[in-house]
Amino acid sequence: MAALAAVCAAAAGQQQNDSFFSAAGAARPIQNCKMKAEQAKKTEFVRIAGKLRTQLANTQKDKNGCLYNRKSDSRAEYSILEELEHQMSVHRKTEKTKILQQLTKIRNNVKRLQRQLDDVKPTSEFVDKLKEMLEEIEHAINTFKDEQRQIYEQLLKDEKTAVNELSIFEKKVELWATGSSTTEKVLKLPSARISVNKTLENHLPEEVVEFERFLQQTGGRQGGWDDCDHQNFLKVWTKHRGKLSYVDEALEYLCGRTKEDVEQHGIWYQEFLILQDRKKESIKKWKEKLQREKEERLKKKEKSEKIVERLQYEEDQMQKAEERRQQQAAISAWKKQKAENLQWSKFHN
Image 1 (tube, one colour):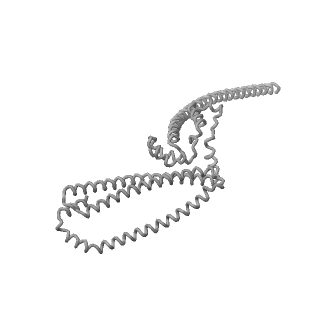
Image 2 (cartoon, one colour; image 1 turned 30 degrees about the vertical axis):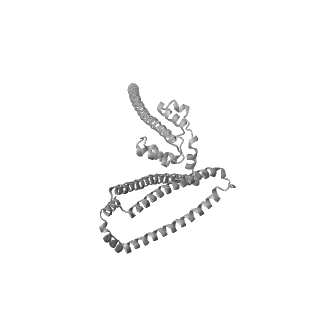
Image 3 (cartoon, helix red, strand yellow; image 1 turned 30 degrees about the horizontal axis):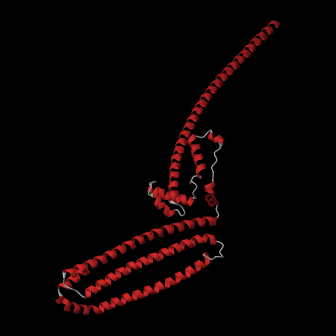
């Protein structure tokens, strides 16, 4: 619109042309310096772009030789990757053609406007025509910028997803490389089963048995997922507090998982939490019951011990009384014998 104002001013006052061209002549050296600087930047850009293009061509050549070799043992697996790359290549070419068409259209409109400015006419119709052309160019440029910004934002999102997936793969490969027992447990987790002894079922609370049976039927404490995927799921789930908004973000961290997989795992995890809470509450009540029974047994034991102590005390008292009676009887017999002996001695003397 600033250009429109300049055009209108030029159309309204042809008498200012001389002063305008004199000022333009004075500013020409500065403009030449700017043009040289811009030209140098363009040259450097072209040089770097050519260098990168050569590197890309060499990389693609090495990749094609390693991955897409028809004699490769993994040809069947890499053929899927080759087809995907072909589709992406076609998509890039289509997008490039579309961008070039849009830029060409904008450039043609700008050139048409420049031709109109070469022959300025001080009429309202001419000004309206220039205004219409400027608005059309401005609209085309804004539309192009909006489309490219959306594409760029989507590319950034895709890049973030790809980086997360690569990070997950790296962690899995590191686990596989270590060959630790933890890795073996992770890999065997989907087929793992937790056995519940029939004898224990008769003594454990019903909620505990129900929880263990649920784990048996759904693949353990991680719902059949490996530890890496389940931990990433829990991180996003906790961040969103279980709201449905977690699904889209979780997909960025879960390579190879579909939206349906994440939703199903979310349903499983909700049931897991419910059953786990029931189990904890049941175990708490069960322990309280066992504690009460233990206290009752202790009370009964203490009562029994008191009764035994009392009976033992009574028996001891009776034994002591019997011993005293026997002592008294012995003393009485001794006294009687002594008295008889004294009388016999007196009689013979």
